[in-house]
Image (tube, rainbow, N blue to C red; front, side, top):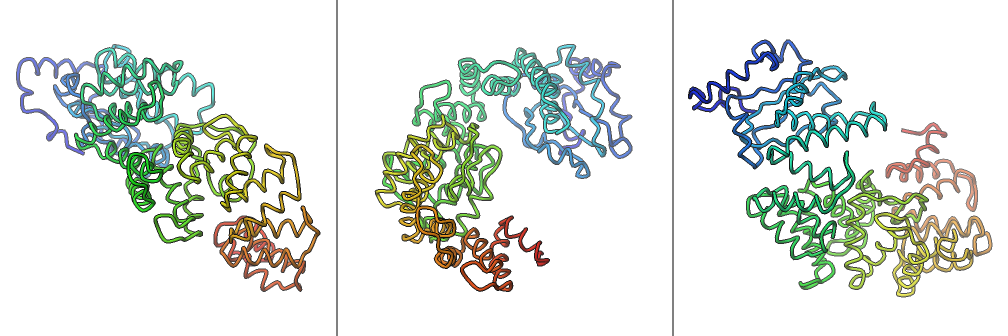
Length: 509
């Protein structure tokens, strides 16, 4: 972070600049000479470096040197990801946040400046309030009030042509933060800023075209705006293009179909992007490519691990929702899963995996309306075509009556077809059917053999259930040591049931 002397302009001695500097010695502003960050760690200080504070009205782009520096001793600030607070370059503001305690630092003077119409104070106050929202101590009613305050502050700063305030105001309209969603207003603000050469707005506008949000879906327009940002050196803009190229390579849209290119491009986005939308989608697809051996050497356990670890509150498609065939009764939407569904839909006529993943979204109500009947129909057609993961899922639909009439015999039939193709989840589920007599006569020794097939392929569920059989002497002679062996293999992959079983035997960790 630049020091005060480095940030101060050489022209500060001119009469105009002198009057501006004198104006900032008003008692409403803190005396920065009295605030040693070493001796006053709980002070929130914004140092306004001479005339650049006022001149920033005329500048647009970000300044990576104008960064946020947080005390590493503050868990609250670490969790807030303060590096995401973006400043305009000629703001030349050095922001220091030192909060050794969890209490909010005093910012009454900043509030006062915002109330007097200072655009920069309004902008910074809105951004710090956004950071405050990361606190778990804020309840729903407080959160709504803060959202409204944030909107008003951004609106106030935006009305004086503060570029980044205009950008964040567009975000408020887009996401319904403190105001009703207004896609027309969102596009209007983004376009104005994008036409002015602001990379963040160009990427956001391209994103709207890509998703068809507020504008007719148009991938060519999306790429054009991403390219405009990339041409200005925006890595985010470049990675958005790479992300789309990956999907086009995967489904052969406008280019030759290539699993290798798709894998490499998704891998690049997964490892280099910080975007909360495209990064988890790309990572999820990297997991599938490893799992299926498409574009890379097949490594099912690596693929499962990637899919498991990629699951988050914003992108809830993990192992349970994609591979294990678990049900959720709560529809869920976010920009990430909505985008994922739209991309899968785009490729659904070209690649079976896109159609399968689209059906999964329909089944769960992730990013689209829940439609289990339609999802089951897609699974069954793909299952007839011989895809083992779809065979697993249509078996699960018949097992639970999801979108089809409950039918234990068809449950077993489809699980068995999946298992016979070497699908380790299908093998585990066939073992389940033999264990409980679902659609087939109960046969514990047969259950053990199918659990073993699954376990030897590295499936943590097959390993855990095989451990149960050895522990309880079901289908095999009781053997605690062998049970522990399989429990540990499952537990090493994070299976909580296996960990609990080992705890019960006094063998974990």
